[in-house]
Image (tube, rainbow, N blue to C red; front, side, top):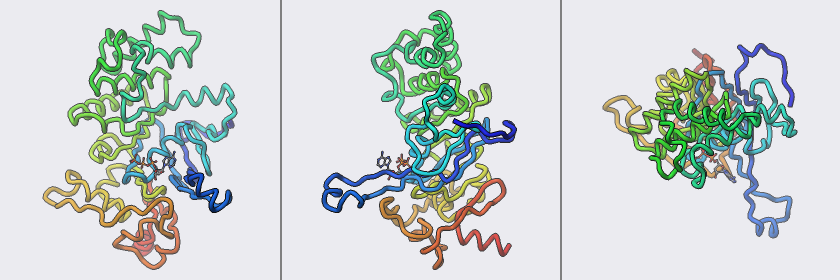
Length: 341
Ligand SMILES: Nc1ncnc2c1ncn2[C@@H]1O[C@H](COP(=O)(O)OP(=O)(O)OP(=O)(O)O)[C@@H](O)[C@H]1O
């Protein structure tokens, strides 16, 4: 792991540069038939540049299969990168040398999953579930101190101390997600990667969890990378939003600006497709056409077959990221609009 010198205050906590992750999805028979050199490669994430400032929330949105979860998993180190680099607090995370510095840095990135039931060990009491990260990351901690820290964490997420003696199945979905959050916090993270943390919950419970996340962010200075299909939740919780389409980031910017004035034709369509985000009284308009297969994405801008503004070059060339205020847009039409403005 290596760190470079830049004042920590100005440096984003997470910096992604040209991040890509490809999956080899050739079935064994395919290789037997066409040879080892001929492979079917799925470009789940392809060339994403993104900065996440400290203490802020950046959400990733986009239709199913656009690469949000893969990008989140790359950030937490669950997959190796196929290309590019990820820096966390100035540390290059693609170098996996198993060193103490690497382990200490990885502890500072924790993940919360969509289904709290599947991600909690059903045979462990809550005390052990939340106590385990403390045992792993702070091995010098005594039993009494660990128990007291578990109680403190339960209180932080709004659960009574007697929850410690119970098993995950004895809790509701919302309470289980609180336990998952407490477990993540037990590792004293700076960055929480939240992959659809509320989508398995009832609507009223979703709001409680989002409020809790905001309170914890304020209290602990946490940074969130938040993934959700629920654009209302995204609008509520985000400082920044990144829009993905077929493995690429097509637009990003400050949340309110992006929701009020989306620039990329795909972002516009995505927002129009959500009833309560579209202007009141305006009908919901689903995005026309199917998302192309990530195994053979269209050349040029991936969105061109569905785009109302597509020009000839959109079918052959890939647009670069044009800066718009603190964000950016990858679109030739926006590029021309900006150049003539
Ligand atoms: N381990 C894997 N092996 C092969 N393909 C994968 C793997 N993980 C993801 N993919 C593929 O990569 C693409 C992006 O998937 P990903 O789960 O990142 O999308 P997503 O935007 O999070 O979707 P969703 O919103 O449905 O969770 C999809 O086409 C998916 O099928």
